[in-house]
Length: 137
Ligand code: 9YT
Image 1 (cartoon, rainbow, N blue to C red):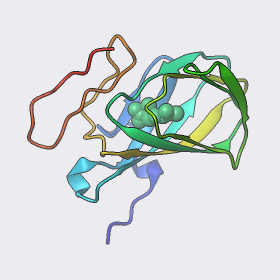
Image 2 (cartoon, rainbow, N blue to C red):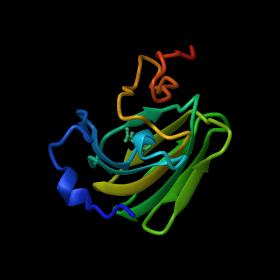
Image 3 (cartoon, rainbow, N blue to C red):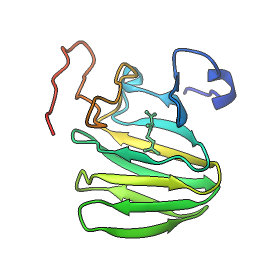
């Protein structure tokens, strides 16, 4: 059993910071359980284009509010606490927080913690012990 707190990850190598959002990865590939689990806090007023070409992601909004646009269909959804979105088709999407948002995110396959968003907003597929394999957009 592993017991840990998001608070314990502040400013560690599991705390990834970008201009628009920061994220604490509490479960990663190295835990060997088949998924990763993150807490992402996004700034009010930010515009975030994401595309996880190599991963399925489920996101639970636990604080704040914003809008999510499915860029494949053009549909926009309000996101408030208790709303979940599941990117089951690797959709390009844009998340626009109107207030600061706190999200709990699950990735399959798990993120290793070494990924950075590339120029397409994509995480490369990295598995423990592997070379980076890029997917072009
Ligand atoms: C909201 C969202 O898509 N978060 C994804 C996780 C975050 N970008 C991270 O941990 O890198």
